[in-house]
Length: 387
Image (cartoon, rainbow, N blue to C red; front, top):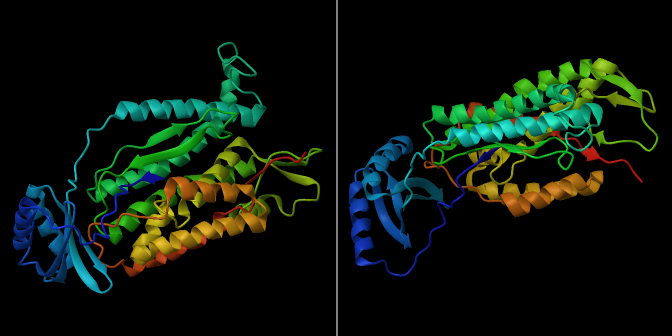
């Protein structure tokens, strides 16, 4: 998962008459691009300026030249099309590289490793460090949590570094991953995932797509083999009286279970090895990120595919989550829909060049990601035992 710049770079409207200094700045910016863009109209809102007209050069070339010409004035250009009209928008947004603080990333990583080890102990033995046993007196018990912790952290780390290295390849300013520890048993898996900070907008839709899709696909390279290996170490067992915590099967999970165990007899279930559970968590996190809403990975992919119509896709996804929760009678999806509404939202900041179309190959990969989402969604992710 990523935290991306969320400041809106569009939808400026005509405002009150700008000051003389802003008028002078607008004239200088307009003159600096007259060989690249034929301006026919202008608008201003605060210190944001934009011009309607016609590009005289291909978008990618025009953007590179405009960046160099606008930078001395502290402005960043955005190219977009709105209702058939081409716009150049200048925003006082400097693309800067913040000083990295790898010590913070390292500390959060180590804390997450410890919290996932504690979660692994709980998964493997039912014991929780400092609650049911003292790890200082019985450090060997902590070893029981390593298989789960190492597998899960490897999946999350591979996911985030997929974003990180792809963003760096495109010259974007990006932070190292921030892992988020979450102590068990309050948080069953010992972590709330990991994020990176994108400090600059994506260059165009192709770059946006590549950065967004790199994380889920990289994470699956680790998650799927880990799940398969963990399932081979799992076994069939009797469902206990009163049931227990059940982790729902997605289509992919169901298929892998069938390949290894065949048809599971009534009253029996797969008792998963901690490595298999970590793989399940990896698939579930990937599924959550692939939902085409807001600034999730799937939301980024959706914007690259459909542009500003992304907002309608996001709203549709929100209501789809509510419907899924109602049909499957799963509170999990209702809660996730609430988190989407409150924390993520439906908007998305455009790339610098919103005119260059997405390549055909990337459209095909985008359809594949939609199929992945269908394969990875468990109708009822986590079910607690009944009263």
